[in-house]
Length: 476
Image (cartoon, rainbow, N blue to C red):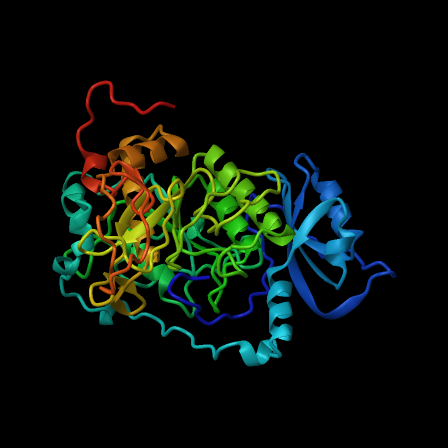
């Protein structure tokens, strides 16, 4: 779900697949032994690695389902089925449905989907002429905190670098974003297969995140960390605020297929608040997400993710193999190997009270703000301040985009090592009593150079574009 809370959700039924993707299948007849129920539900299915597309599709069809798309690179399918026993029927794989999980919870609570869904409110179309033109960069304390105001004077970022904003969609008409947005590389992923429904519809979240990364340096409004790079809207958060596993997988795979240098994920995968229990369902979600991140990394795409606003200690996730942590809470995708997990700090450079943390999970920290001093960025129709690790992560993604500009030959792991290595260390606070009641609100473990609150420290945009020293090159 969006880290700023659940926004309204609209059903998306398009199954149009963009070029380079596997075509959807909609012709298989359900077998006579199928047991259809009232609703057709969507599933993510993890097959054994190396399973061919033909084998995967046959398994889905033979289990009373229909394949929406199959990602052979990671042996993961997205399927739909009206059969109540679909997960048991797919014996050669492991399946999970976020929709089914939410329905189960609703039934247990005695609510119906219709009653539990909030009213839907569509965003008003942005009229570029009505967007305020006053220069508000003086209010961007967050950019000064990471040296972005000075960095863009040296290097605003390259048009060859594309940052995928995996979020709730971007407003294509906002004048601060229109020149940076690349519609050809944008895609909607709510069905689990890429389509053309990538624009913001009910949520301002994705537009706000996009502005932090790449709002234009034009003397109007605000300016992003890397105003010279391109951005792509990859819609993985639906209109009620959910980011289902199949959407997140689709987003990561799409970004990799389009050669994006960096992606930003300011969400955590639903249907759970966080994965604090470790059952078979969570193992399936962990596995498909780990495979997608692994593939994106191997393709050269760095994944940056928000640590979440749950204010809890996180644990890292095993890489793959249908395993989950033995104990503790896991944020997906932030807790996965090769992901840059970003915590949030206030203007005073202290971990925001809402920010989750965890030694070995948090890589870096960035400005996310606190009540009364949030982060100003773009929203449909204008500008607004919002707080959260959702805001912290795109600062790191923007710095990573500057690094990709300076080092066009770097792969994802090299970008991550350089981002971490250039961060400004922040030591654990001697006293973390935000409420003043005499007790610690969270416990920071580690040392000045690497700890559970701030990881390697505050991201540094100026260091990313500073002249390179002779022989400086992180280990490959």
